[in-house]
Structures are given as C-alpha cells and as structure tokens.
Amino acid sequence: MTLFSLLLVLGWERLFKMGEHWQLDHHLMPLFRRFKHFSLLRTLLMTLLAMAVVAAMMLALKGWFFGVPQLIFWILVGLLCIGAGSVRLHYHAYLRAASHNDVHAHDAMAEELTLIHGVPGECSEREYLGELQNALLWINFRFYLAPLFWFVVGGPWGPVLLVGYAFLRAWQSWLARQRDPLIRSQSGVDALLHWIDWLPVRLVGVAYALLGHGERALPAWLASLGDRHTPQYQVLTRLAQFSLARDPHMDKVETPRLAVTLAKKVSLVLVVVVAILTIYGTLV
Image (cartoon, rainbow, N blue to C red; front, side):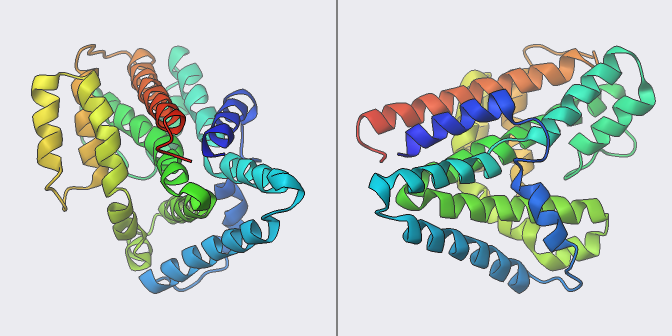
C-alpha cells in the first residue's frame, strides 16, 4: 500500500498541488499563533499529540470496507505532508522576476526561498546564487525526500511518522518567519530536526555523491558518516554541489534551474529504489 499511495500522492502533487490549500503547514499556522511560551518539551508534546491523533484515526479505519477508507486516509495524509505547493509558486515567481530583471521582486522571492537558513549579508553574486541553489536543494529535501523516507520506513505506520515530520517542519518554518532567534532556540526544533534528519540526509547524500564527482563526493560522504555536529543542511548541500560544479553558471535564471533539475533526478532515483524494494518484498 505504501508504493501505491506514494505514486498517487506524487502524481496528484505534481499536477494539481499549486498553493497552500493542500499544505499541512498552512493549516497549522492558526494553531501556532496561539502559543506564547516555547520549549523543547512543548515541541515534543505537540508533535507526539499530532502523531497520536493520526494513529488513532488509522486504528479507527482499520478493517472497514476492505481497507478502502484507510487507503484514502493514507493518500490524504500524503497530499498534506509531501510536496511544496506554495514554495513552488515562490520559485516560479522568482524565475519570472529574474527573467524580467525585476530586482525588487526576485529579491523578495529569493528571501522566501532562503527563509530557513538565510543568505550571508556580505557575499558576491556567485556566492548569492550558490546559496539560492542550496536553499532549493534543501527545500526539495524537506518537502519531498525526507517525508518520502519517513513515509516508507514507517511501514504500516508510515502516515504517523510522516505527520510527525511535517509538523516539525511546519513549526520550524513558522518560527523562522517570526525572525526571533531566541524563540526558535527555546523551541528546540532545530536541534530535534538535526537528529531526525541525520539518517535521511546520509541516504540522499549517496545519490548526490554518485551523480557528482565520485572521487571527491564519495570521500566527503564517508566522512559525514561519523559527523554528528555539522548541520545537516551543510552536509547535504556540500555533496550536491559536487554535481552542480560541473555546470557553473552566473545566470540568475539558469543557476536555480540547475539545482531544481538535479533535485528532481535524485527524487526520481529514490522513488525507483522504493519501487524495486517493494517489488522484491523488502517493503510493504
């Protein structure tokens, strides 16, 4: 059921998910606005509560009408948690603005795309475009590859893990918009996601390493296996840049497109791997 649900979710997301309506992050914002106190314990309790609600719904639907309601529930959860509908709109708006040399508009969209990690204040045009590439690669990981990983490894409880991850992603994004580093630090969400992302980053990093310059990328990937302190964002984007280094560009339109194209290749590779493992009975 995992593969079937995943293929339906990705197909629907690609064709119809444009905007915030099918985005869990958007629907959680009214809830987040109510919070005035922040701590790691509160973050954990909120996440566990969201996962418990999904688990209870799955148990309630189990065995009804030959599993059809449960399958529909799996698909709905996947649609809400996998995919970056609103972020994709920001990306296309950036491309339109950059192609028309609308500096104010494309800077505003670039700021949206680099929301989580930002861009250094003093940097050259080349460094700026490199950071934009990194932000797009990380968005692909956050909204596609990492959710896909937890959806698959969760097996029968895949939607539970998926909602837990999507909840933390939404919480981190909302806190980043508040532009208060102290609040974000008190929530503990960055530290929590650092450990949760450790394994999926290494698995995705293999794909980037193999698509890049193997003689440089593979040693870097092997070194990352024992690295517990470097931010996962840096680990992933460093490996991806080995592939992007083949086609250096200084163009405001072509440079981000290269990153998105590479991210799509890696996503396709991982979906094929999931399909093969499912066919051979390794995954349910």
